Length: 294
Image (cartoon, rainbow, N blue to C red; front, side, top):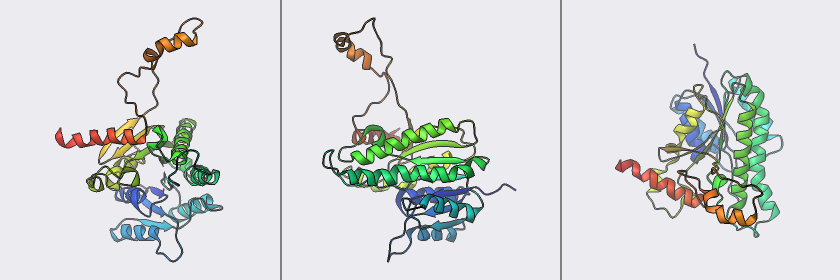
C-alpha cells in the first residue's frame, strides 16, 4: 500500500493558501494548514482544516505565525509529529507591506516585509530540509509574485522580497539537484488588491482555485522539473525565465561603440519583456481571455 504523502501549506487560512491546501488534499495528501491566529477571532487555519476533514480528506491545522520566535522549528515540528514525516512544503505566507514609493518607505517597513516574505521562509526550509531529503520525493513550492520578476510601482519592498525569494529558491534547486528534492517557484495571479481595476470579471476568472493545479502537480513525485518559475491564474499557465540577448562585442569597445550598437545588442527576439508587474499582468490577462476564443 502506498504511503499517504504529507504536506504543509503556510498562510493557508484563506485565498491562495487555502486553495493550495484544498488542491493537495483532493490530490490525496494529508495537509497541515498553517495560518497565524488572531486574539478573539476563530482560527482560520482550523476552519479550512475542518472543511477538508468534513469532505473526507486528511487535514490538521497549525496556528503559529511564520515570523515568531522559534516559529520555523515549531511549525515543521508540529507537522512532522502529526504526520510522521514531511514530503511537501508550500511556502505561501506573506504580506504586501505598505503602499509607498521608494523614498517614502521607512527602514522598518522594508525590514518587516523582508522578515516575513524572505527570512521566515528560509528558516522554514532550514527546519524542513532534513525531513524533505528523507522523503522519497521531497517537494518545495515557493509562492512568489510577478512583482519579484518585474517590480511593481508603490511596492518596492514587496517586489524586493519576492525577487530575493526567487533567487534563493533557484539556488536551492541547484544545490539539491542530486537529491530527491525538487524545488520550484509559482507566481500566481488571483483576484486581489493588485489586480483591482481590471474589472469585476476577475473575481470569477481569477479565483484562487484556478491557480492551484500548478502547485499540486509541482508537489507530485512524478514532477522531476526543478528550479523553474511558473505563472498561473484563471486555469492558464506559462513558464517565466531570465533571458539574455545574443549581444555582441568588438575589440577595445568604447562607450561610443556601445551606444551606436545598443539596439542590436539589446534585442531579445521572440521573448516577452515587461516594464513592470502591472504590464506583465495585463499581457497575461490578454492571453487568458484568448482561451475562450480559440
